Image 1 (tube, rainbow, N blue to C red):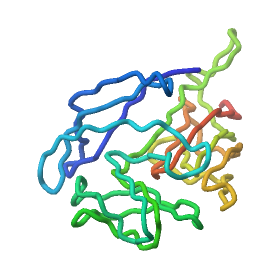
Image 2: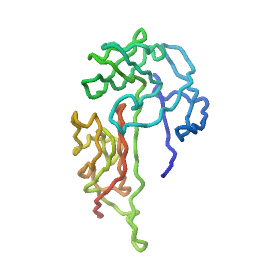
Image 3: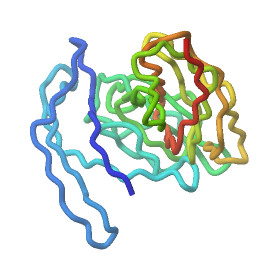
Amino acid sequence: RIWAFHKHFTGQDVGGGYEKVLSIESIPDFVNLRDDVYMCIERVVDGNTVRYIEELAPRGAEGGLGEHTWYVDCGGIYSGSATSNISGLDHLEGRDVTGIAWDADTVPFVVTGTVSSGSVDIGAQVTDAIIGLPYVSTIKTMRISTADIFNTMQGEKKKITECIVRVQDSTTFQIAQSPEAYRDSRDTTIDTGTNGVISQDSRETGPGGMTYDGQIFIQNSTPTPLTVQALIMEVDTA
């Protein structure tokens, strides 16, 4: 296994910044062999500054989208009679939210809305939903180099002509060679038989022109899973 650090921004506020994590604690879970992470987060809800204790949910999309796919912050879960109005969201009053919703006959789909009087109208009848604050996940690769100790691509202009993105239990994503030029993945299709996720190699044409860095950006802006197992790139040098 490989472990790494990442920056986690949460709850973009009305001023364009992000809400504050005031404290964080990790508690070992010896039953499930993981660490449970809890945070005290200061948020602005309905014009008031509040502090919530929130748990970082374990990842999980092996069976497809559903009850284990928590890809929102400060989220709440609904499970009950069919409805298009998801309640129980008083803790996010006035905030723009997103999430996934589904029922026994529907593959989970992305929903958005604004919380009013503790609920949000999603425009479709569902029996289950996970709703919360949106966030964007971004991968930025290291600068390309070669394994040859006598030669290097560092400092040379280069172009990524093709990139194979290997994903597992994932949804669609965006790809770019700079963070200002994202486009949707071209070789990724999802049908209802996959329960909303796919595991495959997505073959992408080069997302940009000649650069010195030769980096790839991959982004997911939806409340759905994205697990990138490998990036295989074909590169031309100047």
